[in-house]
Image (cartoon, rainbow, N blue to C red; front, side, top):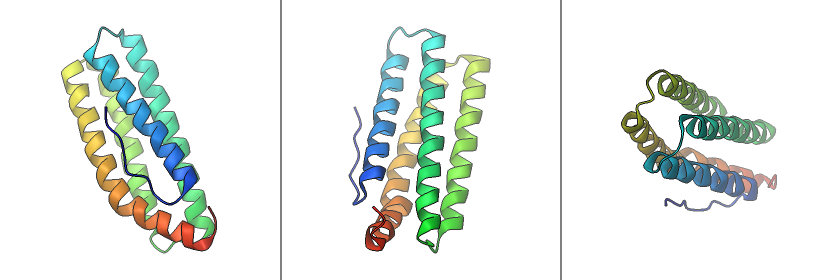
Length: 131
């Protein structure tokens, strides 16, 4: 089970915790005897949560006039597009090994994004008093 390092903004930490819990759940499903429908449902839930989380972050960044808002939002858009493509390919191929690799890549992305873009964003949000 993977975890994450908390930031200084409660909503970000709570939403990141949910993301981590969902990724861990998908890994459990892929390593067990889950049905395709169970994996589908978990992926849909993950994508929906991610979309909502990104929207929440973007609202906060806009509210504080966060200087690197545009590149951070572009990254969110890129990742959501990739997650949707991952879901489509999974539904076409049902290739568990491939999907496991994609989930590993998503973990790697999350760790880097959290330690770079989100850490800076959290610092600005905390300093604004908008937590």
